[in-house]
Length: 302
Ligand code: HEM
Image (cartoon, rainbow, N blue to C red):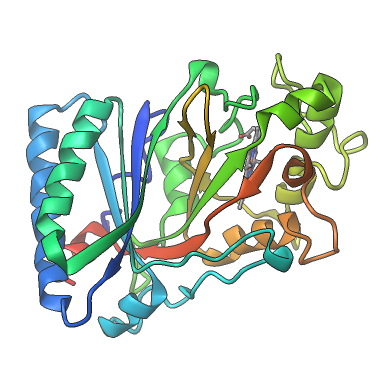
């Protein structure tokens, strides 16, 4: 069975680090070596801290991925384009490093080693540290992640390209940072917040389809195509400070980019002109990029 990278399947991690970087020209050999060193650093820390669910995904934007000439692998990957007349900006980079575990000290240690392995071959463009809050709630007060696929087999089925495919074990990624405006959000009151999300706040119960607004968050992302639900695996975490900027570092993985993109197009008004109510009352997308995370085997042999 092909091995996916290790920051996709484990759920309920307590903390994460999200890094995006650009790759300098002519550095392909260094990048390949850095990925092997990063996997060795991961394995070393996993051995030292076996109960921490430490995981790492290294994923590539389409322009660098295509230079590696694995033409049968990650065929859906493409650059992120701005959506909704700029409501979702495109900030595509060449490489994404996603680390998650039960401990931010361990995440930090791995990030130090991974960035040391890449050295001068990349320029880091963004680094965000995420933290799971009480009851898995966002800074907006709603529980996040409830409808994620549960159990390793289900997560694998949704998140990972199936065995038998040339890119088995791979996964498509969307990384998108959302900055919240909590003053505005608190100003609309809990009933309107619940209508925007499509779930109740305290009890976290889903509203039935007949009362749910079509432009609520659930109305936008709970999609079916030919009777089949378009599922994704979310490993997002809240980020930021209490007194200053905070929001959601959204990250999702899927065996097909199609499911992720269909939800995004629906949120940002590109299907029926309706935009997600969360974008009006809670949050602004400040980044957006697609990446392809090859299997662990391929990452060690780029
Ligand atoms: C569900 C918050 C962005 C896809 C939810 C839920 C919350 C939430 C509170 C309900 C509980 C749950 O099942 O997790 C947010 C916030 C966002 C955001 C605050 C940004 C401001 C996105 C984006 C996507 C997405 C960008 C996809 C591209 C989903 C999906 C569900 C969900 C698939 C589950 C729907 C279902 O099957 O019921 N989100 N989300 N979300 N969200 Fe988001």
